[in-house]
Image (cartoon, rainbow, N blue to C red; front, side):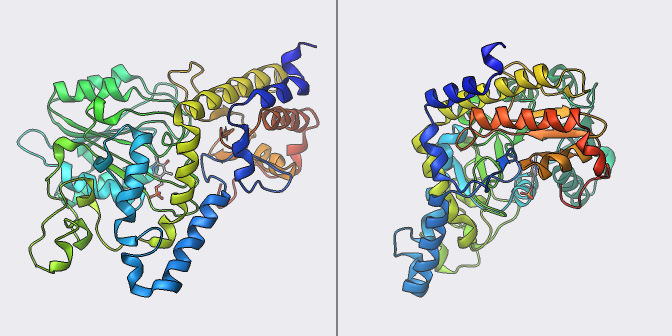
Length: 424
Ligand SMILES: *Cc1c(COP(=O)(O)O)cnc(C)c1O
């Protein structure tokens, strides 16, 4: 047999892995192969300790925890923003830890959607995550426009977007563009630099949803001139269920009044003056609204340290090697079983996960789970597999495909119904 397709090859790759020491930082699910880190990353010991540290600071300091302890609460959102700025290629004060993905989208669109004259529309795409579309429609409605003012660029094959089509849709009635950096289903990376340049040539502001790219691929948002971005921290960043999100505001917009203001939008030294006229922070912090959710932001203190130690370039390099290997094994071992790879295969366009389609996907996923492989199903026929650089191994990938093969050969999926679970 060709060496590549053997377990010993996978084990050799693990031996050479420059990030291998990070696996022991995580709580791996007992005996299972976790391939779902792009939906909910696993807990690390550092995240757990950081959460305990913040709980203890409440116990120990009461209200003085705002200014005392290892991580004074009053400045924690800014400090974590600094840590995340490295991952998005922003300056320190262009990033803040706050809110949730969807709330941050509302915040940013309520600020940057300023219809004027002919420019009254928002440009998005037909493949993005539903929450983004609900938020954009709601924002249009708040400004007195109906759904016809949301332009969604269509996909030809249902999985990928063509950047040419996006650029063609940047017409002179578009006021704002909101797109994903990586499509949640097919894992396609959009060329953010190019799209930003084209949008700005046409005087249109542009922002990106980084939910599926942060912690998985490097970004250079400041240099690219992206107007704003937002993301969650519970997927590749391993912040835990419902962990506090992040946003990026390009320095050129510092001083813009936030659409949704609150007292945490204040300049830090003015906030406790308690005036009824807001003095917004002169950085991304102005886009905070109220008191930070300390117990939901705490795990990030630990989990972001892991990214700093590993370095996002190395994370990306290993992620590509894992997904390359996964695709090779799928092609070799699952040949003839009707499993179609639908993510982009080239490195430039491929994000952190693999996306395959099969008509029996819902029950194949149930069979995978029965066999202790944790995938994620996307209706109607998609399976996402995300081998994560910080905690998955090449041997995990090898085992995952071997189990997948057994399920197909022995038709183990037939014992399940081909319908999705409530949460999938
Ligand atoms: C995960 C995800 C969300 C989730 O939004 P929340 O407000 O965090 O629940 C939104 N958009 C995209 C593209 C996502 O991948």
